[in-house]
Image (cartoon, rainbow, N blue to C red; front, top):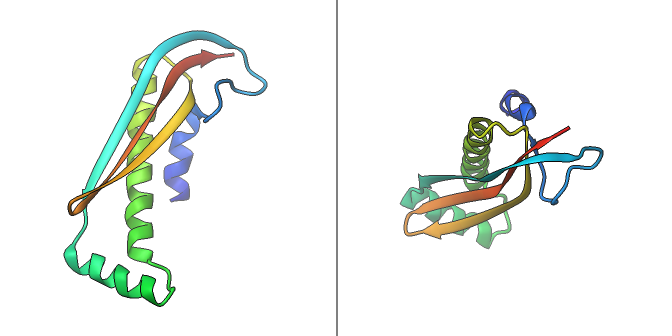
Length: 113
């Protein structure tokens, strides 16, 4: 996962509306990305049993980490296409659909300097 994170270093991503130490020079627009992956019935059953006993549910952690990385990769690509070098005001929503999980991320693509 560290190698995947290194690829994301080109774009600054923050939940705040500014980037400390930088001035926003240009607003490029809203950028968003989403990823959806299906969950298997047996892994859900396994998660229920593990949760009941207070154990870590590694399968769901792995699923969420995979979805998160995919979503951030798409967000970075969208920001780059707009000519931005940062995304401010990042918001993330997680939705549990019938048999699937969706992560939706959005923010404002900007040029900082």
